[in-house]
Image 1 (spheres, rainbow, N blue to C red):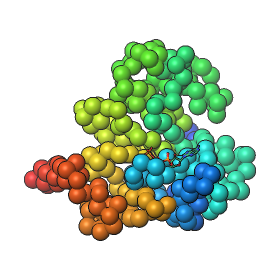
Image 2 (image 1 turned 30 degrees about the vertical axis):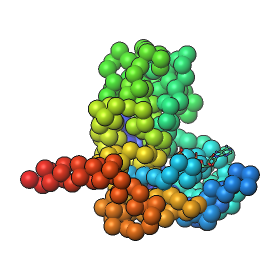
Image 3 (image 1 turned 135 degrees about the horizontal axis):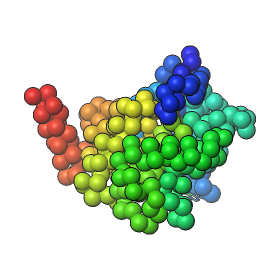
Image 4 (image 1 turned 60 degrees about the horizontal axis):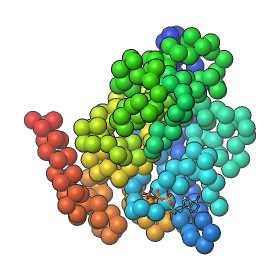
Amino acid sequence: MRYFRWCLVCWECEVDSVPLSPSDVIEMQKICTSFGKHQVHANLDLSVKRGEIFALIGDSGSGKSTLLREMMLLHKPDSGSIRVLDIDLNSATEQQIKELHQRWGVMFQYGGLFGTLTIRANVGLPLREHTNLVDELINQIADWKIKISGLQEDAALQFPDQLSGGMLKRASMARALAMDPILLFLDEPTAGLDPSGADGIDKLIKDVQAMYQATIVMVTHDLDLLWQIADRVAVLGEGKVVGVGTMLELSTMTHPIIRSYFDGARGRSAQQLALIQRQKLIA
Ligand SMILES: Nc1ncnc2c1ncn2[C@@H]1O[C@H](COP(=O)(O)OP(=O)(O)OP(=O)(O)O)[C@@H](O)[C@H]1O
C-alpha cells in the first residue's frame, strides 16, 4: 500500500510517497533491554496502528522512555525486532534511517530547543538539515508551524528562555511539525504545566492529529490527557505490556498495576470528569 501526501506549503507538489503496512506503523516483538543487571524489558511485544493516538503509561522506572527511545533509534535493545513505517530498525540502511528522521517528529519532555537560537531558527533546523530550501522559504514554513502550534507571531523572534513552559511545549511541537511528519513522538507533553496550560496542549495534540492524520505515540503520567485524547493505552509493568486498550477497556481490567491507575483518588476523578464531558457531548 502506498501513502501520498501533499506539501503543506503550496498544496501542489507531492512531497512524499511512503510504503506503509495497512495498519501497524510500529511493531515491536520480543524486546529485551537491560542496563547492567537491571532488566527493564523482558520479551515485550507492542504494536501501534496507523492514525491512532497511542499512550505508554506505567510506574516510574517501568521503561516507558527507554521504549520510546528505542522506537526513535536513540537506544538499541539487547534483542528483539522493531519495525517502524515498514522499516526493520535492526537492518535499516543509512538511507532508510535518514528517511525515517524525515518522516517522524519528536517533542522532547524539556523542549530540546537550542537556547542560543530564536524559535524560528529552532523550528527551521530540521528543514535546513533535510532539505535544500532557501532561507526565506524555511523562515516562512517555520512561521507557519509556529502559528499552527498556537503561538503568537512575535514568538518567532524570541529565544527559548523568554517563553513560558506552555509556550516552550508549543515551540517544541512547531519544530516536531517542521517536516510534516506522519509519525509523532511526544515525551510527557503536559509535564510541568498548570491545568489550563495542559488543557491547551490536549487540544493542540488533537488538532495536529486531525490536520496531519499522523500517528502519535506519547509517554505521559497525565490521567486527564489519557481520558481526553488517547485512542489506546499500553500499561507497562514487570518488563512487559500488562494491558492495552481504550481507557474504558483498561478500567475493567484486573491486573494490580492497571488497577492502580483507576482506584486512586486521582484516577477516579479523571474518570468521572471524562464521563461527565462525554455525557455533555452526547446531550
Ligand atoms: N542510560 C541508562 N543507564 C542506566 N540505567 C538506565 C538508563 N536509562 C534508563 N535506565 C534505567 O532503566 C529504567 C527505566 O527507565 P525509563 O526512563 O525508561 O523509565 P520510565 O518508565 O520512563 O520512568 P519515568 O516515568 O520515571 O520517567 C530505570 O530504572 C532507569 O534508571
